[in-house]
Structures are given as C-alpha cells and as structure tokens.
Length: 331
Image (cartoon, rainbow, N blue to C red):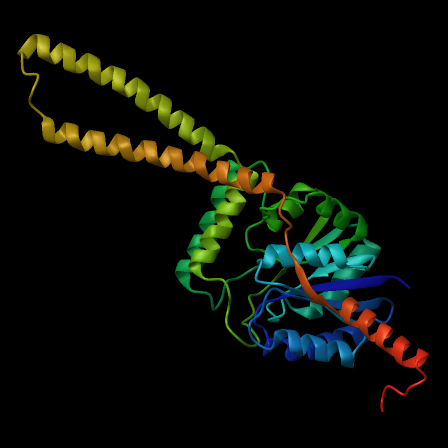
C-alpha cells in the first residue's frame, strides 16, 4: 500500500486544528487505498497549538508533529515538512480549511491515472477578500510574470499533491531565502491545475498582514528575477546621458544669453530628484546583497524544539528502564 503525507503548517491555530482534524478524518475514510499520515508543523506558536498537536498524536498514530524553537515562517515550516515527510505522495495544506480537503481524493486519482507529477490548486475567485488586497495580489502576479523567466500562476495556492521525485527536487533547493510558489514552478515536472472558489477561514484570524505579504512578494521578486538590478543599471545610464545633455545646454545658454546663475530653485529640485534615484538604485542593489549575505552564513532554515518522534523515543526508553527494573510503570 502506498503512503501519503499531508504537511500542515500551523501558527497559533489552536481553534482551527480540531476542526481540521475532524474534516480530514472524513477524507481519510474515503481514501482507504492509501496509507495516510498528517504531519503538523508548529511554527513557534504562542497559544495551545502544540498541546493540541500532542493530544492528536496520542489519539491517532497517523498524526505526527514538529515544533520549532521559535517562529521561522511558513516557508521554513514547508521545508521542514518536506524533509520529514515519509510518504510516496506528499501534500501541502493550510489548517484553516481554505484549502478544501475534499479535493484530496481527486488529486490522488489524477496522479495515479493521468501521469502527472503534481496536482496544484488556484482560486478562481477572491470572494470575501478586501479589494485592496486582491488588487495588490493580482498586480504582484502580473509584475513578477513580466520580469521573471519562471511563470507563477495567478491565484496559486500552496495546496498541492506531489510525487516523491518532485519532493526530492524541491529539497535540493536548500536556499535560506525561500519562495515556494516560485520553487514549485522552477523545478518543473508535469503539473495539473485545479480551480476552486475562495473559502473563508474555519476559525481564527489570518496571520498574513499587508506588511508580511509585501515582504513575501519581495522574496519572490529578488529570488526569481534580476530585472530590478537591470532597471538600476538602465536608470544610471539614462541619467548619465541626461547630465551630459544638460551640461551642453547650460554651456550653450551661458554663451548666448550670459545668464549662468539663474534657476537655482529648479537646480535644487533636480539635485534632490537625482539623489533620490541614486538612493533607490543603491537600495535595490542592497536588497540583493543582503540576500547574498544571509545565504553565505549557511544558517539552518529552522531549529526543532520538539517532535512526535522524539516523544516516542523518550517514551520507549522510559518503558525499557521500568521493564529492566521489574517495575510496573502504571504504578
């Protein structure tokens, strides 16, 4: 029997976890032809998320968990899940049920019957999402697809099911600054896309603020395009040519009209404008340099504090000690 691992990143999802588990139990009943396991990844939650994970592990052996020493971000949680997944098929899914678990049996059948390496999902609508957020998201996808050679599907979710060979390819990309949507597309492999309408969260609140989304979009742009660097170079050359042109105009004007000192307010504006452009270009270069600096440090993408395997190992050792001593552990 083949095995499927479902990776579920969690950050302060104490309320959503029981609801998600209940829904997944119904789905797992339908998928009797495959062995299922749920791998929850606690991304440094400060509520009772880890306690709920431990309770689910005690209740159901199909539930495993990993817990980080602090919040490392969803990208790190995804990478940790992929590293620790043991299934022949590996799925990524959000715990808030915005990724419908009911699609999982269909995704599995597609991989089994149609020869695809991956089945990915995207939203056909953004119902319930603030308009400004939808506008900015669509603008980001348009921009990155124009400046990057890696095409990223508009509305793409992290929710997907992959075969083991694709997972191995993704793990080969062990970069510190990660943008999974781009990585999934960069590694290639045959992917079929399924559309579904936007679904509201089952419980809790979204952890993606506008600031976090902006920083995440910067990760995508700097990770999969060097167009901003080219833009900075082009701007520099244009202003260099413009400066030579303006010098010629000033010299010519002075020779003809003899008025070299007028126009200081406009000159001050030009100096501020050019200075701003220089700082912008320096900032673009700085963004790429900072990413390079972080990569060269070779810091771990995540640090584990606790896991279900560690708990199982500790429990086994404890039982062994009690047995060697000839004592009843329950006593």
